Length: 151
Image (cartoon, rainbow, N blue to C red):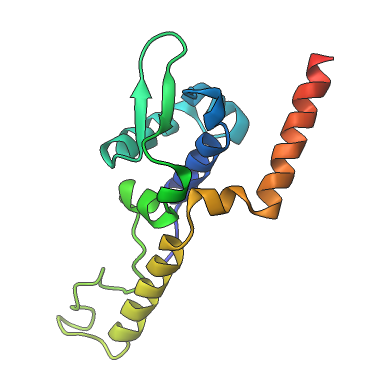
């Protein structure tokens, strides 16, 4: 099991959106610039996030995206699920046909691992991520750079 770029970028973009939510709707161009994710890729991700009811879009001048729920009510597992990312550690995709059509000897081990990973990610909200030391430090650097460029 490996979390792909799609899942990583979706979580990163949602965290960026949560961090800047006080500024009103955030354009994908702003997220793209801050996070180094291509605009076209963000458009694809946010289409799925909108369908998953995690974000809403505001059209027109000053428009952009905003969280559909409070940051404490959106967890990492929901984000990953919304972009159709798999958190499955089995070789069979959870179907149980991993060994010539039958369940392999370690199928339940990998299923349990998948469930543990999903539970772990379900317990981490965007609000919790926002309070992590490295995120807080990055925000301070961003504010300092903004203040420096305005002077």
